[in-house]
Image (cartoon, rainbow, N blue to C red; front, side, top):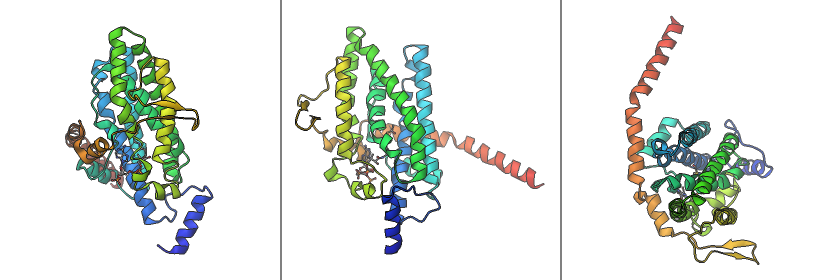
Length: 311
Ligand code: ACO
C-alpha cells in the first residue's frame, strides 16, 4: 500500500472518523475485519446450539417462550454481522463454507456442553455478560457497518444477560438441589467465560494492530479484568462461590486478583479438540445440507419472478 494513503487512512482513524464500505482501506484492515466480523457472526450462529438444546426441556411455558426468543435473537445477530461482513466484499456463502469446513473459527465457549437447566442461567449471566463487555466498546469501532450492527446487538444482549441472571436467582434461592445445580453451572462456566476474551495480551497476535486501527477498542486482558470485577459481586449476591481459591480484592490496584484460565485447554478448544467441537460442526453441516432445498426453492422463485418481469 502507498505510504501516503496509509498515513491519511490512519489519520482518519485517529480523528475518530468512521470508515465506510466504499472508502479506501488497507488490505490488512479489510482482512482483519472480515476475520473478526466473520468469526463473530459464526459465534452467534453456533451459539444457538447449546441453548437450543434446552428449548424442549425448559421448565415452564414462560421460560420456553423466553429461551426461544433469545435463541432467535442470536440468529438475527448472526445475520446482521454477515451483512456487515458482506460490505467488505465477501459473500455470506463463502463465509459459511469457511465455517463448515473449519477454516474459520467461532467462539471457544460454544464448544462446552449445557448439561442442566442451571446452565441456561449461567450462559445468559456469564457468556452473554462477557459478550456485552466485549461488544459495548465495539459500538465505537472504526468500521461504520460493524459499529452500527453492535448497537442493536448490545441492547438485545443486555436482555439476554438479565434473563440468565434471573434464572440464576431462582435456582440459587430455590431448593438445596437447585442451589447445587446453580453452583455446578458456575463452576463449569467460569473459566470458559474468562477464555472468551482471547489469549493473554502477551500471546495475542492481532491486538496491537487491531487497536491501532480501532477494530478493537481494548485489549483482551483489560476486558477480562473488567468482567471479573463486575461479576464477582454478582456471584456474591447470588450466594454462590466463584471457583477460584486465589480470587481476592486487591485494595492497591482496585481490582480483583484472579487465577488465569488454563491456556492449554483454550488452545486445544480453538484447535478443534474441545468437548463439543465435532458435534457443533456436524450440526451446522447437517443444517446447511438439509436446508439446500429451501435455498434452491428461493432461487427458483426469484428466477421465475425475474423472467415474468422481463416478459
Ligand atoms: N474463541 C476462539 N478463538 C479465539 C478466541 C476465542 N474466545 N479468542 C481468540 N481467538 C483466536 C483469534 O481468532 C486468533 O486466531 P486467528 O488468527 O486464527 O483468527 C487467535 O485466537 C489469537 O487471538 P487474538 O490475536 O487476541 O485475536 P483477536 O484480536 O481477534 O481477539 C476477540 C479475539 C477478543 C474474540 C476479538 O476477535 C473480538 O473482539 N471479536 C468480536 C467479538 C466476538 O467475536 N464475540 C464472539 C463471542 S460472543 C457471542 O457471540 C455471543
